[in-house]
Length: 156
Image 1: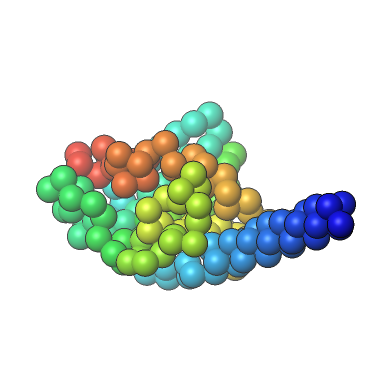
Image 2: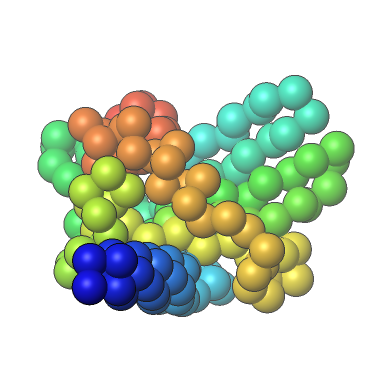
């Protein structure tokens, strides 16, 4: 009886892990849509790393919240144009909405932020591993998970 119980428990754990992983993959970026009007916002930073140039845009409301020392408001969208070798490579968008992110375990969760990658033609880049976004931004918890909050503070 004991081996049968262990086999059943093992199978249940494997199924649970697979369902959780699939659900998290679905729950993530699917909430974020391409912000067609992102360039109407504020271009607040250019980050150069070797042959990579990142152009960052967000709303005036997000910048003013950071300047006041407040968290980013629900509805904040940060759009990054990722240029490589002088060509547009992709867009990466992070968006914050009240209640988002609750399905992630604490070790992965980035507050209420979600991420999505888009190809240069603005279609969803389904090959992007969004776990990398969560992992990288997790270390910026004290800045509401945003690496460039300091650049926003210095934006006129």
